[in-house]
Structures are given as C-alpha cells and as structure tokens.
Length: 123
Image (cartoon, rainbow, N blue to C red; front, side, top):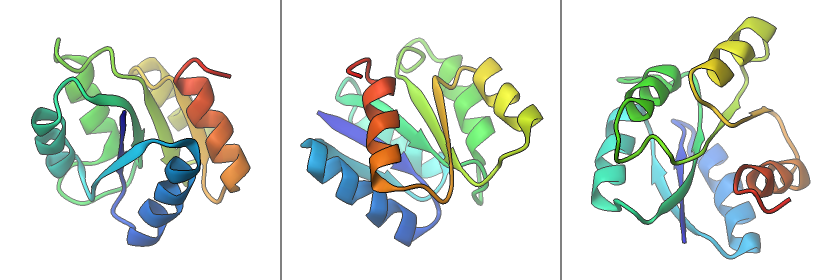
C-alpha cells in the first residue's frame, strides 16, 4: 500500500511521510514529474494515491497530472494536489484536469490526513 509524494521540497516530503506513517502507508517520493513517472512505472499497480505539488522543475504538477490521466495504466490513480497555489482558477483547472482533491500549503497534519482519507474513499 504505497502513496507517491511528488514535491521538490524535502521538508514537505518529510511532513507528508510522517502523516503516511501514522496511517500505515508506505511512502514513495519523487522531486518532480519526470522522476514521478519513473517511480510510477517501477511500482506499477502498487500506488494507491498521488500527492502532487504544482510548482516543480523539469515537469510541473499540472503537466504530470495531464500526462497520467491520458495513460490507461495510471489514469485511475487518484491525485490530490498539495500546493501553495490558491487561486480559484488554478484549483478549478486542476480539478478539471483530473485531480480528485486539493490541499493548500501550509496545512496541518490533521488536514492532510483527512484529505488523504477522502481521496482514498475512506472518509
């Protein structure tokens, strides 16, 4: 039971990993969309959820989201945007591109856990 965190911030990935540990999920980490695609292919079928930042080098979050939603192997994996982008238009854009949920940084561990559970259909 793995959850892929895609964020260029080591600190954010660590915060998310701590929340995943509380929930009992294994954390897989990538620092940008290019690395995340590679990790998705390596762990194909094992990733339950993707937690995705918007602003990253090499491949940003929205490009990554569009890419996986067009791939039959990955399109059904739920994606929660975890980002500082708080403009209404960007939130609507991400949801229309296929994001299931959206959490704005900074967030509490409780907020993150709630969004993860919602995205997995548990809460």
